[in-house]
Length: 243
Image 1: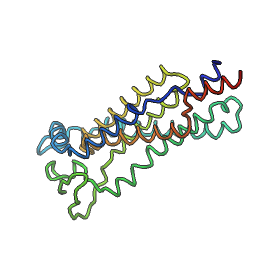
Image 2 (image 1 turned 60 degrees about the vertical axis):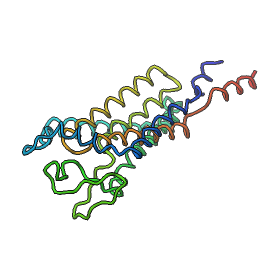
Image 3 (image 1 turned 180 degrees about the horizontal axis):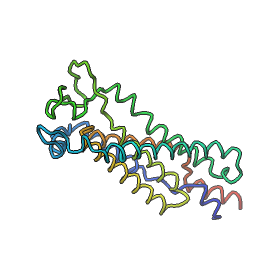
């Protein structure tokens, strides 16, 4: 099989793992409300009378939140510029589908957050009475208590800025498998760091960010399946036909 064929078509995708694992996590989160775990972890990061340990941390707010998010936004903008350029620049034309996938996957992985925050109205830990706030806690699927300040904390927005880079795994999956694994580890690590930083500030519970990781992975997987996925068996059939 030619190198061109190998770079164009994909190895078969194991949906039992790629789709089964995140759906299983989502099902468990729905069936077993992780309230105890969320509060246990939040209590580790909270000091009564003082607040969350990272609530006023300049490093967490300025560097790990603002500057880090700006870096991901810049990467997204560069992807858009590269995709537009792929219609005109000869060197970028072979990467048109990959760049288009990046724009689609990253765009959807971040765009879904704000509408879902508004619909679910889940309170942040720092707003709850258990952690020095005024609001009443309610599980994800429960009725929200009446309040003048609806929550905007589910799913985790900053975590999405890291987990959206799951797209790197899929964009390299067919051409550079080792680099794809590195991209997956990088996205998982960055999303986890962003998640922990916001938990330290009291902005999110653990489950908020876990939901974000599930959503971002599924969005990137669906975008990959729609735009880039070309099973190996199709490549083999085409190679036989060419011969």
